[in-house]
Length: 374
Image (cartoon, rainbow, N blue to C red; front, top):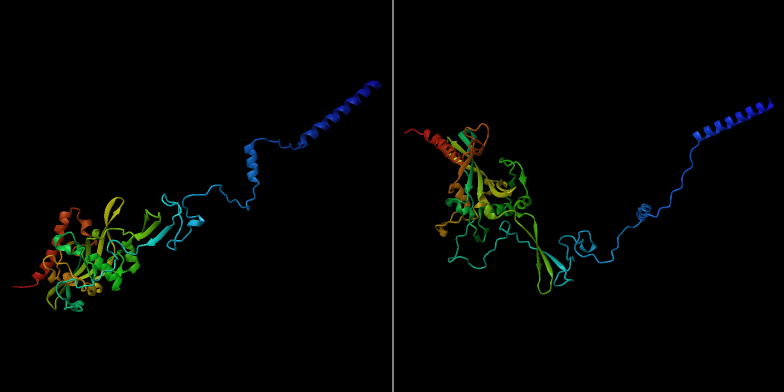
């Protein structure tokens, strides 16, 4: 009997010990494992790169000299136009420096200074030098204007009658193209040019803004001396377009019938040159700027128009416009145009546009003729 009791107590103690051990292993955290020592070179390099101090100097010092040019190298950080700079060695002379020079002559005749003749350029003495001034306009009262319309025209310099607008000759006043005369008046005679956003002369332009339209961007040409190997960089202004591409001029004018004088007056209000520029591979016309015609009349009296028939019988540009000695076609008018659209938007056929322009001329002429009784 005692042996059975002893055996039962021993079994109870064994069960209590095993239950405690199971509870301790359930809630006990495992011991952390030690990192294994690796022999992988890539992993070692990665660990070494991760331990680099970011504040330390990481400048790479190459074993060989770096050749070529770079805008970030110390030897090539010279500002534009401040002096000489060293670039890659040339084949003729590896140690030859590069010289930067500027060509201030604007190509194309847009902004070139006129060359004055040092001797008499004519067979006779030109003693009839006078200060020519334009004739003043007659005063037109608003109450006397019984009929008025605005007309927009375009002058094509390729027409035979308008070839004087494209004459590329030179005289004491410089280039004789009409577009060059406009630029000369803006630069030298303080004539104000206006933006091409509209034709009502609302936004004036500075002289630098006008010249930037034609001068274009900088163009660099490398010139190497074959004897010394010296490289010279000539920086010039490359024009955006040729002066011969400006052969169209737009005119805004107003026709007024004055009942006091009993006649029709035609007054030019503005002139705008139109350039041909290539956009997306297609030539497109672009109005550069507007010039108020009464402001430029005094400047136009200084320049003579090329006369193919007789050089001694030349007129001034102011006389050419006032005498209507040019050929043009109407592109827009305020006659029967409530939508304020040009003929290009109203009529697609170019031939019918020309016929509609002639129809507008006939309407204006018939109004004046119908006022008379015979």
